Image (cartoon, rainbow over all chains, first blue to last red; front, side):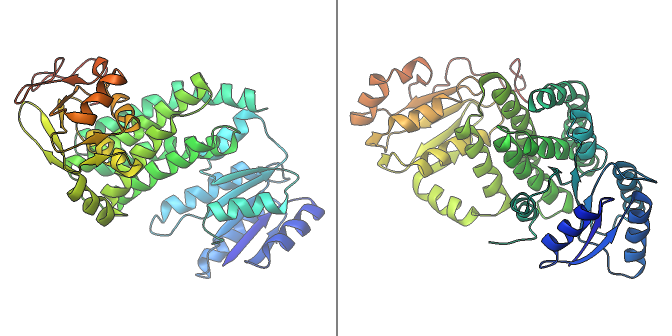
Length: 131
Length: 253
């Protein structure tokens, strides 16, 4: 399985990669523009991502806009399964949370700091970890 | 944070999701299954996600997930687009909103109601269907009739949760316009918990009972269930039954 981590903070990228690398082949990008590019490239390679961890406040393009572009690409190719997206962000205001689920069709939302148990709980809900 | 989120969420539910869901249900009812489910998908996904994130609302999230799964099976064609399945889908979606309202108004959902709806969805999905059908063959026979559907209890003792679930599930699967008569002639004893589960549906379905005898009758009257579930003679329809073709006020369509 493949996962993409979109996170602008060095420490955050490192921690999330370490958490995920026992389960996924992990790629890391540092902003929304790179996330969209990586997503597109993975599809062109025929090896799309199964999971995307998306920060929201990132330079160049924020996570919600990047997610909107990714969903639009998926909409254009509806036969492909939609990537599961976990928002990993410091933002916890109601509008952002609701927008993430409604507009971005996120599968989960984790407020930073991301703890391993919380992340794995979400991965279980999404079926990536079977007990 | 969670209070502000709950407030915003309820505002969204009422302003944005209700109208979307009503449109989706209308399409479903008109036989436009794919379009209806497409419209329902977004608000339900949002409800599942946001309630999963809000402490105290986890049960609503898990329940919404099950309703969503049922809709996805309908959409994928794994489940037949039968009138029963469409009606169940509508009932599941309505129940999601009922659960949210229960949490908002009472602080907790009615878990028995959630379990009963899940059981019916599961049985209709084929998961655990063999078990449900096998048990139903022993405990309950459903006999549709023009005036009222008769649920004939076949077991001599009705006390178990699974038996209550079968009876409740059979009622939930019926349109609310259908009067229900529970025939307990074959039952020698009937648990108050089971009566309680059935009585909980009385505001939504017109339910009568016939064939009460022995310990079954004593327990029924001892707990005053006759105030909600009306005893009816053989062949009669419970009071309040709606003539065919009419829909009671407030009933889900």
